[in-house]
Image (cartoon, rainbow, N blue to C red; front, side):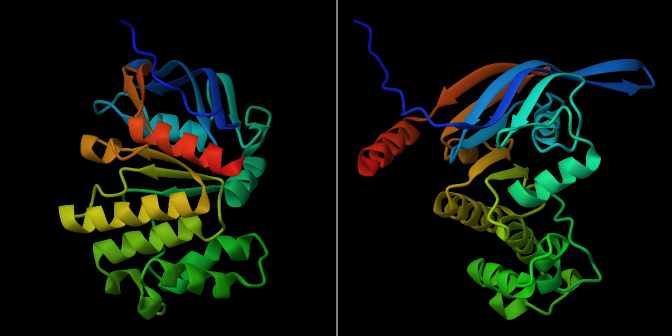
Length: 251
C-alpha cells in the first residue's frame, strides 16, 4: 500500500532558477559548469547543497548571489530577474537583500571587528551602522571583541564576525559556502549552531554549501548536484512537520 508523504504548505520562492547554464573558458576549452539547473527555494527555507568536489555547488551559490552571470536561463532572487541587471545593480541587490559567509572569512585585516561588521551598513548609508554592528557582534557572543583586529581573533571568532556581518542588514537570503571548512570540529559546530539559530530567528532563507552530510541533514532540504546537474532533492521530515506547525499557528 502506497504511503503519501505530506507536503509542507506552499511558500513564495525567494530564489528561482530556470534552466540555468554556466559556461567558463579554460585552457582546455569551454567548461560546462552548470547544465540546466531548475530550482525553487522558498522564503525562510534552509537548503543544503551537497555533491562531490567540482560538481558545481559553489558556482550555483555564486549565480544565485549575482556574483556570476548565468550563460543561459533565468535567475530570480527576491522577485528580481538578475539577467537585465548590470554589476552596480547586482551589488545594490546584494547589499540590500543578501548576506554571504565564505569559508575564508574575508575580513579586512586593517579594520576592527566592529568596523568590518559596520562596513556594509555604511555603504548603504545607514546612520546607525556602528550601533547595529555592535548589536550584531553582541548577538554572536563577541561584544568583548569589538576593537580587536582579525589577526587578534581565533578562527572561530573571525567566522563569527563574518556571520555577524552577513546578518547585520537582516537579509532575506543568506549564502554560506563551506563556512566551517577552516575550523576544527568543535568550533565548526558552534558556528553552525549559531548560523542555524540566527537563520531561524530572522526567518531568512539559508543556502548552505557543504560536504558534511550530518550538517546537511539539519537543513530543511538537501539538494544534490553532480556534474552540473540537479540529481536529488530531498525534503527532511522534521522540516515538513515544522512548516505545518507554523502554518497552523498562523491560521
